[in-house]
Image 1 (cartoon, rainbow, N blue to C red):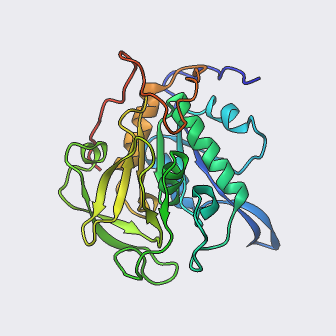
Image 2 (spheres, rainbow, N blue to C red):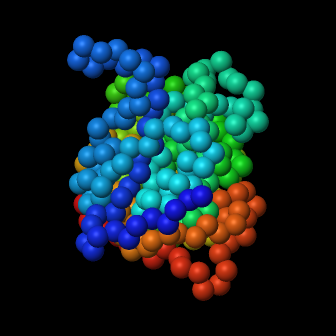
Image 3 (cartoon, rainbow, N blue to C red):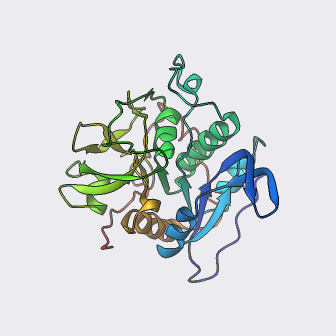
Length: 278
């Protein structure tokens, strides 16, 4: 049984969980072993934005996602490998990378649990795609090979995205065009239930941000990598919403994270949009 989370100390920074890779082999010092790992840009961005970062390696316990989200103030689902096409009912393209079933299952469970509990959520690159799949959407398995989305192997490149006026993203990043660091070869195809586009690639219209307007709380996915740049605004928005929404023992609304779920009842707490300078 999930235990209520202890009340945080007054003024304590929000506790932000960040999902991780689970790699069969990684090298450091004298060692080469299986490892849960994450680029340092993620936890540093959370810290610079005023949060405390907690790394969340995959856990196959069915109760793990609920237990974890009960103790967190916010969630970041990180970038990483391609989502298994079987998760959205598609035949694998030859250009799609290998499957990571443990990570897919874990991040889908975390995402659905965050939506059910109203825990503030930021999906980064793969994390945005996981959000779409969790809501019943599909993915484009390969975009044209273009520097607009992926440059040289292992190198982030900048490209422009255009926030949709009136969107959650536009309230955080109000410029007409925002230059962002990017590295991806897949993208959102059919939008999941209740999701709307919050931004498009300026060059070709690819969906670059997703939002869930009916959600109880802050829900935002971006196709780029804020942890690879210096703009703190997205993470600050998540951390500040986590600070406002924090309370002990979050109650889970039944089925709120499932595709087709009804929006919160009238009078429910909704995210109040905030825009902060970098």
